[in-house]
Image 1 (tube, rainbow, N blue to C red):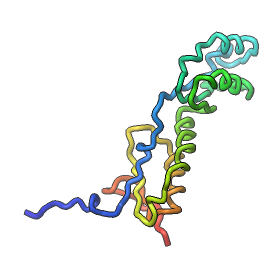
Image 2: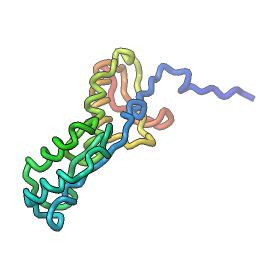
Image 3: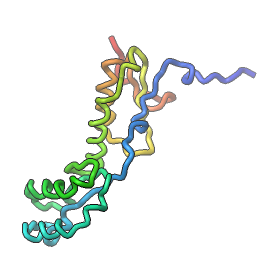
Image 4: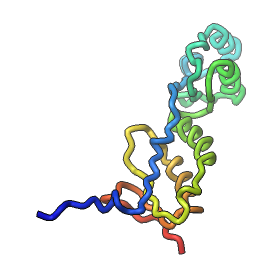
Amino acid sequence: MEEIVNKVANSALEVFDLEDYYPKGIRTQIDISQWLLEGFLLKEKDFREHLKNHDWTQYQDQFVAIHCSTDAIIPAWASILVAIQLAPFAKKIINGTIEDLDAALYEELLPKIDYAVYQNKPIIIKGCSRKPVPMRAYVLAAHHLQAYARSIMYGEACSAVPLYKKK
């Protein structure tokens, strides 16, 4: 019987797994509509009172996304005021969804990676992950890797899709 050889493991192929860089920490979303009259109307005095009485310490060391789940027209200062209340407690604050928050975290982190270790190597950007890696992170990773890699593929070694090959 012939020995089974794992050609992928023995190849020069490097796996770039965005999940390895997933920032650790609790992600929280604050919905401004909870402080609006019937979820739609912002009355400044009431809004400020709600913010004053809210327990901001619960967001200690968390990544926080501020958004409004209704179609309310919110003045820009409202989200800014919420962010100011969060600032002493939260690690990071963005205006948007949890996916926007994850994208912002990757946008901070990915430019700091030393991609020189991938110089002239075939790279596969791992496609499946157990963590919510946003598509923007994959695009940004490919952008950074392209300056170094001999080739870039996406997916898993057994079924990778070719994306780029250095000329």
